[in-house]
Length: 372
Image 1 (spheres, rainbow, N blue to C red):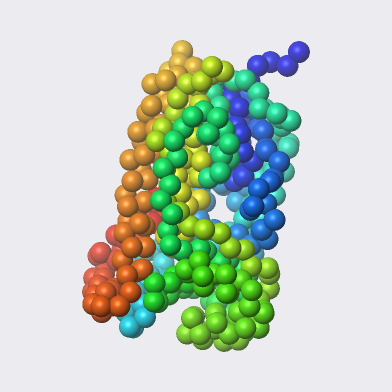
Image 2 (image 1 turned 180 degrees about the horizontal axis):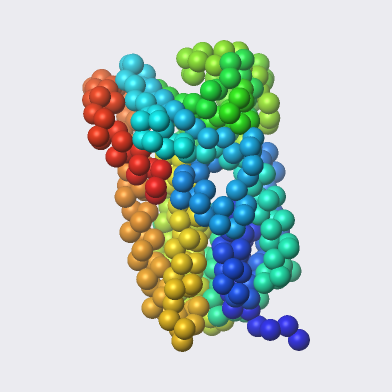
């Protein structure tokens, strides 16, 4: 008869599998339940690529799951432009850093994590959720378990949809990440394919109406629109994937921890919080959740169980405080750059140029994002 589980993790994405591997290092008995894909997002093409900071890189390296090149592309420079000519740039060499961030091919990372979980004897792959001293919910923003536990998820929709795809470029990206703010829209080019790559992952935040139009354009016409929006910086563009579209939202669970009939529970990742993708911090925030939770469990008093209420309240306070500044800054930037007309474009241009000339402020901003 198998021994009872210490922890049951519901959700098999990057956040859930990373947590399972971290807890298995502590010789805890971990069960991992991966729900079957379903719902409106299950048919979307998997074109995801995320910007992961140094803290996330260190965490994934600790479980031996950091992807090798070209699946992880270091970003040496970031350039941000505003419609009237405001510019802001960040350079890793000025910060004495290996990279500002790394653009990681998420399907590759998920496959690597899945292989590591499969060969970890302390992790049992479950066909259904199981009872445990602690259940950690990592199911994403549409979590059914969060609803099962009666947790309110406060959602504020943005008047934007994201459209994501992979694009091949005539000119190599030279390890530069680029972002444009124009007419209330936000376009990001994330370099892919390693240091000499010539492809990018795009995330384009636009109105729902514009997203519907862009989604149904021919590949050639879509690339013409993208070419114009990116100021022709990488030459001719060729669509290299399907296009995925989804609505954007800001959201946070009212409670991140609690106790049900079967035992204690905690939320992590998108099941606990969602932010706008303009900051590139969504997955970093989720990995920071699991890093904090695993550290508290590892450092607990020997007599304290993994589902101890005091331990979980400490996790909730710490992570809510940790994400508050990032979520507030991201929401503020989205609001500011979505204001059309009037004096706003000129004000944004002035602010970006002032920051770009202020070396100390610019370095502080870069390090906040790198170390979050």
